[in-house]
Length: 563
Image 1 (tube, rainbow, N blue to C red):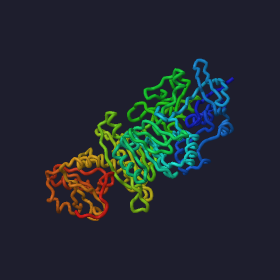
Image 2: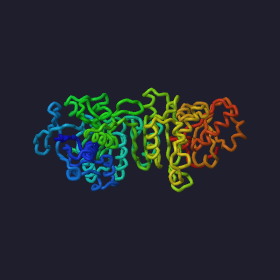
Image 3: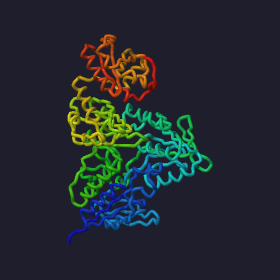
Image 4: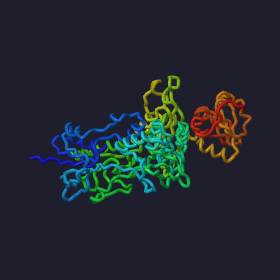
């Protein structure tokens, strides 16, 4: 008689249901049980901010009722049930019905821990006041949505400028609230983007009416007589608030695994091998509670994303039914919508690459998401990061109203396969005017880095140029655009000189060959051409501004002036 495989899965958000579904497809005879504290399974938590703003209606929140898994997949689903203990020797899980407090035990042959992660909630004064929320599940989203409807004070304060915080900022604004975002670090999306890219997001958020406060640490909250929050204490200031969202990241839920004696990794997540087995080979773990490998640094990391959790679930579902599937790791891909901007990062950002010990080379390249002559081409800005010696791609960031996600996905694929800038420069991407330019901005970015490697191109970032201007350094900031472009918009600084590119060869005698010259245009194409002309004419210290005016996030003069 063939023994029936008894599979118990703790957690029903993403990884757990995916593992259960995969296991059932591979083993029709297995006994499969899912344990979930809440009523819904397979919830798309990444859609919750859009429910608050009204883009997603309540009936469309993507989740599954327990009966779907019972009838379609022929498995036992215990909702409203919490797993409280794993007895590895007896191969049992103790569970409790949350409503009745009834305790039972479940036998397992293979056990899956998919307990997810919980929002970080500091022990600040007043943190338990009504109107202070986190956003981690459907009940959270419903409670926020209902609370907004009762508000007399229309001020919302979001603590934390990560992805969830900025998505909430957009959707709180859509719900008619005045929004302030507080961030302890110096720019929005600080773990995702480098400061020079994030500066464009900051500018866009302010243009949308969001009040941003950086380098600000919350110390507590104030409430009214009814126990509802009405103020956020930031240092010696107090901000008015009708509702507060804490968006400070998440911590993996590992207590159950830790109490069972399973190994917890250095990141704080459950340690697993390539098969997603824990230190007990009959217990698997995946999703937000488990570690994974960064494919670039080869170090363990935590990636609290539904995309990773679903991939983990499929691997686990294969392996608990006798397979040998593996999960190699991630490259750290993330995308987020910030009002009218699409924002993405994959691989390492510049700070992370340096911390990992790489000597890097970078570039900023503006472009459009399809051919400029085809209607509705939208701008994007690409930052590419590579290892200086080998040209191996290490990471990339793409922002703008144009299609950033497409480029991020291409970069994520290239990073996963260990591609270099040489590979990227010649990769065979799809081209037709409605979809792309003949040379994608990624092609252009890779070629700029190749030119830098070869010594043809020398560049300063907009941030470096701004620092030189602010310090009053002696150099020439040579604008080679047309007079009409200058009159429409330009950088105002004593170092700036206008000399349109068609006149450069004729009038380069007006320039001193010993002066430092930094050339700019709209997108760096003409600036690079000007640099090559000047270098060929014997100028000794010439560079161009990476990304030129399109990558400049600082103030400019708009409208005609004389120069």
